[in-house]
Length: 354
Ligand SMILES: *[C@@H]1O[C@H](CO)[C@@H](O)[C@H](O)[C@H]1NC(C)=O
Image 1 (cartoon, rainbow, N blue to C red):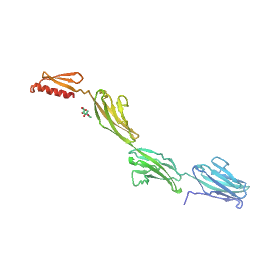
Image 2 (cartoon, rainbow, N blue to C red):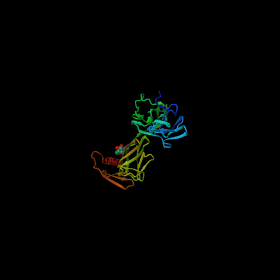
Image 3 (cartoon, protein in one colour):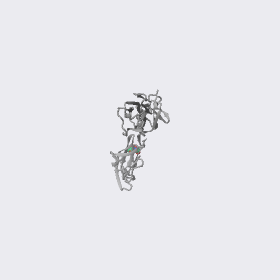
Image 4 (cartoon, protein in one colour):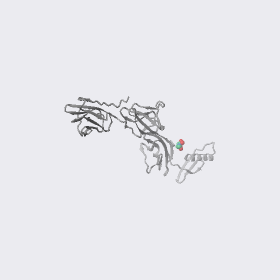
């Protein structure tokens, strides 16, 4: 049986033939925030008609939330504006004429329609998290919640990763990127056949990964020479890449230049002091990851221009453009002819400079 519709319409007649009181409607069920009126119609000769609230107090005309007004001689209208739970109870209409009196009552029930108190969209999680997808519903009686994804009801019995919590939230254990999308939180109150829903976007962020293209970069200290360090990052949302050296964040300027997405760092006019570890850092909402790149800086590369044997035990090396000379003396080895020894020494020395 439908238990929601409690209506008590009680009429008592002190003088049965004299006065009759009837309340319309006989059912008093109001949704929170809504308004409703009740007519108290009196048959018979009466002077006074009054409505009484559930506390037994006479309701005065034109009070703000609950008011009474006279439509005609025999009808007094009770209006309940913006009902709240406090408005519930038994209202009584009393008609009097001298010592004759009659009354009727109506029980007013206040119910809460399905209301989404907190159903934010989007809701973001990190990949791998146990995602608690919020959908807070209030209603009286309480609503049953079902969740739908891609048009189908989520069957918690079929996938152990999904669980509907006692508060109606959907829990996805170890949420994956593929779980991303629109989720539908649907609330039903069987007693009223009432149904409502909210669509919520679920976003799954992915912690960045970062990889150096080369973990070690060699450069020579030379005027105008530059070194390129590069790291490639991945993740969701697309991570930003920044660089640091000796705990100082590097910015584009005379010395450093970063490309559009920050993946490449160019170091200009490389000097010995630039040597060391550089950190590339990928960062997004889900977190950050970093990687080290070592820069080795070698001395200036000088190409020997010529190498000559002098006196069979001396090598004279001259360098191009630099007017540098290096004179090396070797102790002749007894088993090697002096001329050949000098040539070998010359070759060996040249290679050392190259
Ligand atoms: C850099 O130089 C060192 C020393 O000469 C060498 O061992 C290493 O392989 C070089 N690395 C690269 C990436 O060229």
